[in-house]
Length: 498
Image 1 (cartoon, rainbow, N blue to C red):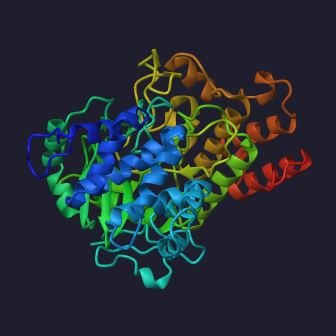
Image 2: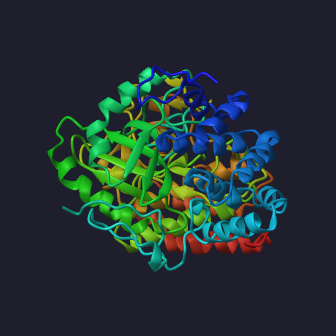
């Protein structure tokens, strides 16, 4: 097959780029991706393995084919990228991998099972489980030791709008076409340009290799890119954000490192997306785990909304115990792993961007003077131009500091708005920017049963108290909110095993 690039050693071929940008169209490129996986270039093998995994996720009809072709190559002489791809698929589609491995000859099957057994205890497909004893550390001088049992996702660095803004800076969330970065059609030449532009960031990263796979896309915090990283032989799906600086950015820069260190500290919780690496030069940037989608873009509502909110509450409680205020809880800041989700799937929600909304100079919401109803990439209308919090989910203190500063009580409010959204399928407030701002700062609270009379009245009480205009009337802590919501869930006969 013709290698469709310009012959430069750093070029990614066009079919590979096209598949990474839109895995659903990758069916015709599978044979070519397998050729790249067999090739001599480790960078292309890494990208091809990633692309094959994405194709298997996006096209269930091809899943067994991709798994079978990978297993066919999985012997002791196979390049490591084959094993990494199978590690990833073994956790997500264990039955398909099991069926393929069972058809191998005895010696190859034994090798495969030993390798995949190691993987499912913490290998490449590690994102579905964080070991209970995982230790998160900060500091450029230390990556986790695979022999210690610590979570190999850790790559920490030095202590030295609306749902349409569904961005990978939302810690790896997807763009309108399911990828961080711009829409499909990105060329290899564009990626070379992007890579040159990000060369200083890539050079500063602690990854042994960091390959940018998509064009940048403007999000609420900066420019976001999808990337593939490698450290000590382990591969990582990465969302890379380069943050834009506020006009007066001295304090922003001074506090950015502390906020990212804090994110690293709380990222060991099951409901918080982990950050791998970060730096402040040439501009502040962070590399976080890539997640497939967000609540803002997820098709269909989760089957267990109360469980989802309780999980997010647990993550926020963990953050608060470490002195970290999220400050910007909304659907765009709730991520899910996996590119393919449906309404019947119960997936672990992940809080993204903890603490970033508290940085000096960050605009929380658009002012009410900038009215207008826009349609975002998530297909939902929202008010005003982008801030770091969707105005429909913002607390009164986001709009007017006479209601107090952004603090832990703001996170309680955010949980209340998410509970409303998850139970009703709609935002708590609608209208133009001025209308939304006025409603948020009024004494009238969103009432779930007004949107759906079949919902239990107990939810009205929980949402109403969590979203009280004045902080003193809200739950004193996220733990208090969590306790009452768990009681409501138990009264409804729901359990964690449902």
